[in-house]
Length: 148
Image 1 (cartoon, rainbow, N blue to C red):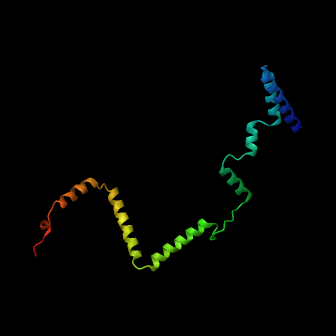
Image 2: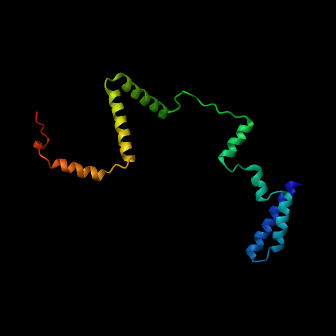
Image 3: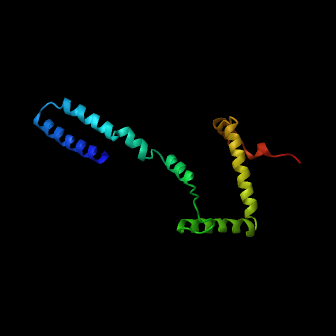
């Protein structure tokens, strides 16, 4: 019966299309078409509510209800990007651990970045600093000599 109603709605849609092309009024046919679609249950809201997912979140929720648990390959190189990242991590670790002096240089650089961040966020005036530095450029070496 449902299939028969859908076939009739399709035939009625074709008749309305022919009438539109001929310039004939389709008000009565349109009301009949709407009534037929509602009784067949093929309105847009009923179709959308029943069969469609509106977002990725709905798909995930549906899969979780089914008990789906993804099985990711943990620790495996899945592609060249993973392999390249792992090699870079090993090289950086090797340099930090085995190269003498590089660990200290890294720590000094981190401290310098922290100090620069503190100066930036503390209202440090760069223009004022440059003016003060210019005053020192004008001084002679004799101004800095200390009598011993």
